[in-house]
Length: 295
Image 1: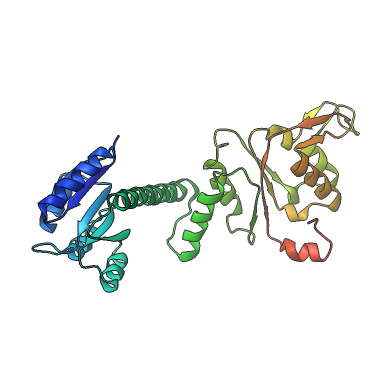
Image 2 (image 1 turned 90 degrees about the vertical axis):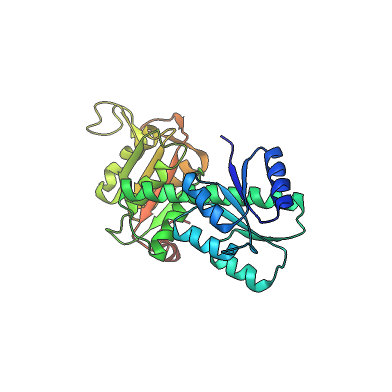
């Protein structure tokens, strides 16, 4: 579906010219001559971008912009002015305008500015949708600076396939963050496999992570797949990774570097495609300085 543009300018020649240009660029374009007409147009439909002249009869462009924000319009607004000055540009930006362009208009610059404004609006809508989803599914509510920053970080790292380390005190929701990252990743349809390193005895952690073959140790009456193999093509969440022994850390590091491992008691390498998200309540930088955690 084509994106929609509303042109607001009291000069008929500019309205007609911009409407033609926007139509040629593949947009659906409407045009009105005043701020009042702009507000009425938005009662009938929404627009993805509004090209809004500052100097208008009746309510001017900046007052129109203020009213647009007051009614909750999320249209990207590009201010147009034939008498540009820094004060007007600053005020327009504070009121939520995406950009400010001056007459006489450069068609090339105007089209580029509109496309950039639409791209920014799309990113903002995606972030808002993601924030709502995180709040609903993972109870990540709140509009504090810290919470907004956290949601933004999640939205940045989730689409990548990079490894993530989450640091926080016990009970602060590290697993919720890990699940949110997984849910927004390309692996979302695959399992989210968890391992709580602190809850597994030292003598069993290798078997839990890498699996074992039958007869690998006393009690190994059948072969068992480890969490790394179960998470092939998926996400593996290593909780409290700072509690792993140096020996296990070394083996996990090898998997991270080579994407392959051997089950306990086996000499055959198993290749996997695993995204690892780890969490800890320990300051791993200090642990490394003390030789307790591998860099």
